[in-house]
Amino acid sequence: MLAVENLEVVYNDVILVLRGTSLEVGDGRIVALLGANGAGKTTTLRAISGLLEVHEGEVTKGDVLLDGERITHLDPAERVRRGISQVMEGRRVFAEMTVDDNLRAGAYANPSGFKRSYDRVMSLFPRLAERRTSTAGYLSGGEQQMLAIGRALMQDPKLLILDEPSLGLAPLLVQEVRDIITEINQQGTSVLLIEQNATMALSIAHHGYIMETGKMVMDGTPAKLLKDEDVKEFYLGVHATGERKSFREVKHYRRRKRWLS
Image 1 (tube, rainbow, N blue to C red):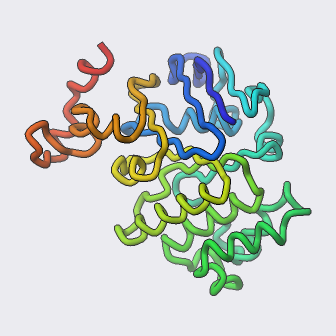
Image 2 (cartoon, rainbow, N blue to C red):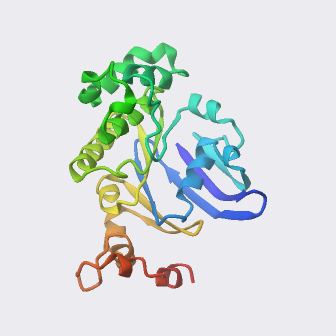
């Protein structure tokens, strides 16, 4: 499915952000990419979806492959046609358009499959079915997140990329989004999930990667990552003694010394 191989990305010709990043997403798999703010997660997504140029970024080394074919320098629209859909952080719905119009916009590269994709979205998100004629800007935060995911699914993607889908949502809605991601995957769509909510992400992922300052510092099965003391301390907020740590303690910078030395 997707392979990112030894990727280096530079912004504005001078700022090196990714430093030999590699990851894989297999067919029918959910892969979680975890990391603190500034680790390079969003840059990795831009390299996969083709949006680096918009942000003055450039791949200077390495490749992105989809089903064995090099897509590193294809434009974003062509990558969508080949089966990659991304839900950006912050939902980014068309606020002045209705739910239905947002979904129609999402199917621009899949006109022949519109009805099947539309029926799938309505089945996954009954709340959207109830609000099809509502203006997207008046939906709740949770409903807008559902709409953003639904719009991405209108392309009938092979790979769905989700950037912080639980951000700003209440705990009950986080659980609902988690269950929806699982169902989407069970229907045959591979998922690359970028999350700061490590507990949620690792509860549904088949494999996980941890990123720090542009490098992958650890990867493995969720069971392996959840047993690791660094992961528990820095991403789950649990000290080696089993005690819950404070935010200040969790953000302590000595993880750089332990993981990147």
